[in-house]
Amino acid sequence: MSALAGGVFAATDTRDDDAELRQLVDDLGQRAYDAGLGHRGVPDQFDAELWRNLEDTGLARLASTSDMGAGPRELAVALYGVARHAGAVPLAETDALAGWLGQQAGIELPAGPLSVAIADAETDNGRVTGTAHAVPWARACTAAVLAVSTPAGLQVGVIDVTPGELREGHNLAGEPRDSIAFDVSADQLHAVDPTVGTELARRGAWSRCVQTIAVLDAAAALSVEHTRQRVQFGRPLSAFQSVQQSLAGMAGEIERARAAAELAVAAAAEHGFASPHTDYAVTVAKVAVGRAVGPVTSVAHQLHGAIGVTSEHPLWLFTLRAQSWTSDYGTTTHFARRLGRLVLAGEDPWSLVTGDLTQLENNSR
Image (cartoon, rainbow, N blue to C red; front, side, top):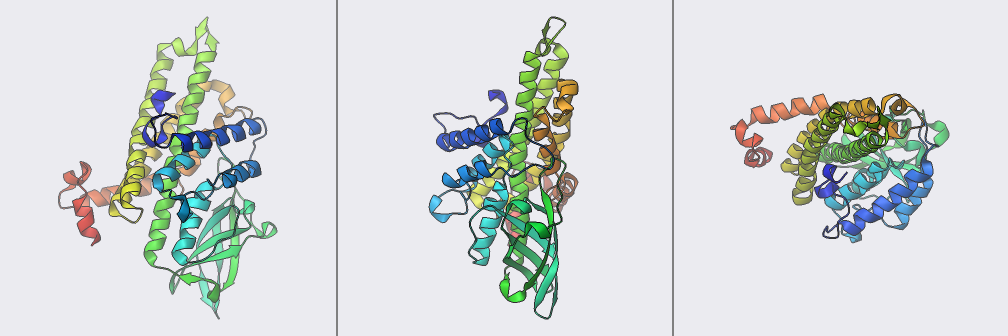
C-alpha cells in the first residue's frame, strides 16, 4: 500500500525524520489490533492495554507535554498510527484537545485518559449547570475538561466523571459518546478568551481529518488484500479490469483528501493552530476528506461483497469510523459553506484558491 501513503502519513522510511516515532506507534497499534480481532463490538470497549503502552512511551500526551518538544507534525503521526489500527482510546481528546485546553486555562490536569465536554450552560446563585452531549469516551475517563459557554463568556474547568451518572451512547462506529450533566461552582471554572473555543473546534476538526485519512488507508489496504486473495472464475478479483478501476478510483479519492490533510498539518506546524492559514487549511481539509469518505467506503464494501458487512470482518472498524468522524466538530456541508464564504469575501477570490493567503492575514488583523 505504499502508493496510498506519503508525507506525514508515509510508511516507515529510514530517511524519514519521524521514522522511529512512526514505527513505535505502528507497532503499538498493530499489537492492539491483533489482540482485538474477533472481540470488537458495538459499543466498543476502551483498550486499557493500548492506553498503558501509550502512556509508558510518552505518546498519550506527546504534544501537550512541553518537555517532549513535539508539535503538530508529531501529533499527526501519533493520531494517524493509532487510528490506522482502529485503536479504541481517546488519544486526540486527551492530547490535542484536553491537554491543550488545560494549558490555556492554567489548570492542572489529572493523569489518565481525558475527554473534552463542550456545552452551553446556565448560571444561577454561583452555580453553573447544563449537560454536555456526545462526549467522546467519557465512560473511560475519571475526569473531563469542561468548556462551557455562559452569559459571562467561555469558561473552562475539570469535572469528575462518574460512570453510573452518565447517559451512555455511541456513534455509528460504536465509539462511546456519552452525555454528562454538570452542576459546578462558578469558582471551579476559569474564564478564557473566546478565541480559545474557536481554536478548540479547529483542533478537533484537524484531528478528525488526520484520523480519517488513517482509516481510509486501512479500508483501502483491506480491499487490496481481499481482491488479491479472492479467486473468481479461476483468477483473483484484482485481475479483473473493473476491480482495478475501482481500486484506482479509491486511491484517487484518498490521495486528494490526503493532500488537503497534509496542507492542514503543514499549516499547523508552521503557523500554529490560531493562524488564519491553519483555519483555511483545516476548512479545505474537512471538505476534501469528508467528500472522500462516501466513495471510498462504498467501494470498499462493494469489493468485499457480503463478508464486508459482517461483524466478524474488520472492515467495519474503519469504514464506520470514517463515516462517524465526518460529522465531528462540524459537518462537511458546514465547512463547504464556510469555504465558499471565505473565497467570496476576498478581494481576489482566485488568489485565495491558488494559495495566496495574504488577504486572510489582512482580514485577521
